[in-house]
Amino acid sequence: MHELSIATSIVEIAAGHVLEAGGGRVLAVIVRVGRLASVHEGALRSAFDVAIADTPLAGSELRVVAVPVRIFCRSCAGERELAGIGSLACPTCGTVSGDIRAGTELELESIELEPPDTSTIGAATTGPVEIATP
Amino acid sequence: MSDAASPLPRILEVRTKILKKNDEIARAMRGRFEAQGVVVVNIVSSPGTGKTAFLEETLARLHARGIPVAAVVGDLETDNDARRLARSGVPVRQIMTHGLCHLEAEMVQAHLDGWDLSGLHYLFIENVGNLVCPTSWDLGESVRLAMLSVTEGEDKPLKYPGLFNTADLVAITKIDLASACEFDRDLAVANLEVVRPGIRVLETSAKTGQGIDEWLMELDGRRLRGR
Ligand SMILES: Nc1nc2c(ncn2[C@@H]2O[C@H](COP(=O)(O)OP(=O)(O)OP(=O)(O)O)[C@@H](O)[C@H]2O)c(=O)[nH]1
Ligand SMILES: [Mg+2]
Ligand SMILES: [Zn+2]
Image 1 (cartoon, each protein chain N blue to C red):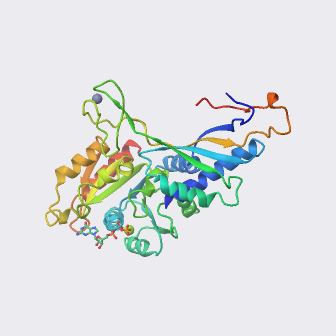
Image 2: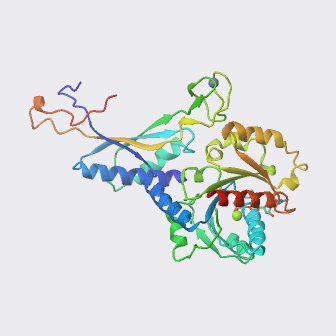
Image 3: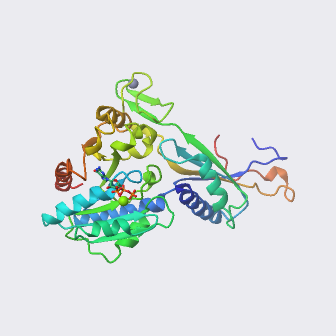
């Protein structure tokens, strides 16, 4: 149920950025959700579909990037990615670490807007205003 | 590479915390609490773990010692818990969330409005009974106390690592029922240790009073240390 609060916040923040950028049709909203953030992806998706109704985000898609937990293991002197979240033990040596480097985030990463209309202007002069490095 | 037939979408980089508004309110409240010298405890657990019973015992003892304290309690509906807590004689306010499964900083702020907290030693916040949803909402607390009752099973920390991982302190409640439930204390502590290494674990009973004085000493220590 808290996914609805999260979806509402996503919509509020995203709508503000779209407005600031001069509007446009929103294709997708990309969020990063850490595996330890206690958020259910399916529930967040459903909540998003409810929350975007009658907003500038109506019709857009939510893309969820699930972020695995990464700990810093002192015994290995390095960062280690964990397969699950039921234990913070290092997968290499078994040492338990509370030094979490990733996996708790709840972030709005980016917004994809429909590209400028190419049918009325020369294709050579158009192009993405800003491109994220993939 | 963009080709003219299908231009790439425009990307707006945002990189913002989704709950930044909550975080900002919580940060402002934490600043006020610290300036007023009040230690704020956010209590989280499943429904029925014994948050209210534990708080009743805590408030009664602190009140009897003349220590100024107050409490706010979140529930989906009803003010039963607030009425139970108010019997201890300390000021209590109920937050009814009307279906929302967790407290948010804004709700706590609204319910503290007009309340003079200066002079208080402790403010306790009983969150809505839920082991998932309260995880990401900072309420400006100095201490997040997660609870686990012996009747719930030792594996709760492994099933709800997200929440236990944010705890500053854990209380294993209803310890008076431990043997009836064949509760394996060492296993529970080991399970807490893999999701929250180094966490301090108290064992308490609201029925017998076991562990409550130890808890009050822990609180006192944190107040003296300033958190
Ligand atoms: N034996 C025993 N029973 C307890 C103890 N603490 C609470 N209980 C019982 O457990 C039940 C639930 O206790 P509450 O204090 O209402 O639990 P809660 O966590 O506040 O519940 P919600 O606010 O609904 O989430 C009640 O019947 C209490 O009497 C305890 O230490 N020992
Ligand atoms: Mg209660
Ligand atoms: Zn290691």
